[in-house]
Image 1 (cartoon, one colour):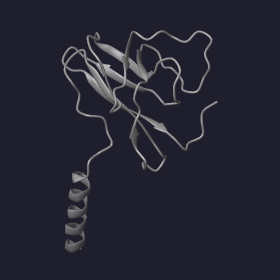
Image 2: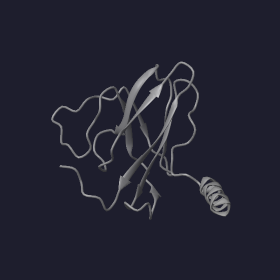
Image 3: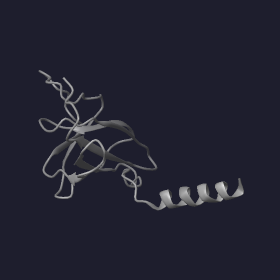
Length: 133
């Protein structure tokens, strides 16, 4: 039993050392940083998505929906060559980070910005998943 516990402890420690696909640590107040990547549903073939407009919205925006009057973002940013984007000067509150305008179908994510810290987010475009209607 002790050997099994030791093996499990080593396994958990080894898994913790593997780089995570999670968003980077939260930045300072008023800042939201993020990255947009494409990948297959199993996590393979990950690649940055460059040149995509990203919006910070006060209300959720559903991917794949054609809206006649889409909500306007409170801020927009463009992804760089490595898929990264940054919003500066956001007031404290909740923001829905999603594709702004046309682009790939990507589920958005809620983040919270406080007077003490910002937020970070990872947006993932699944390249082999069914597109929402």
